[in-house]
Amino acid sequence: MSVPSLGSLPIRLLRLYGGLALYGLGIGLQVESAVGNSPWDVFHQGVAIRTGLTIGMVIIAVGALVMLLWIPLKQKPGLGTISNVIFLGLFADAAIWLLPTPDHWALKWTYLLTAVVAIALATALYISAKMGPGPRDGIMTGLMRLGLSVRLGRFLIEITALAVGWLLGGTLGLGTLVFALAIGPLTQLFSRWFPLT
Image (cartoon, rainbow, N blue to C red):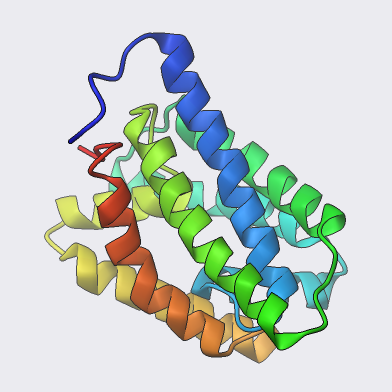
């Protein structure tokens, strides 16, 4: 059973910013778990290690740079796109700063599994607000318009981010594999209540 129509602007804004806050919390949980980050966050963490910036600052900078790739792909940003660039990194930094670092394996895995569920729900929330895709999501839709399959486009981009991030020192591990395997099915599950299209 799906949630009724999008509703008023305040409801859409609540979905957008609630989703971004939850996504930031998920990033913080996964980074603090030290079990393995998502492919993009392996990259963000690797750049942060090399530059001395926070992970959130790197997320903001990379999001802004990725949007430059939208120009040749003829993608147009929305409020959700700009908000993603600005707020996702701020929420992630706040979560990393506030969360205690777990030292027991059970708590590390609790962080990780909670992170994956949170990010899947967050993705469904902010995309269902229909206020523009995130900068990285926009590349996928732009590549689709050029005839590349979403699966292949996403794989090529994420495997590149993962490899470069790992070379820079980002945390790659079992958590990365869990994220890769679970994020799609979980996002699909939550899209029953928060339709993506």
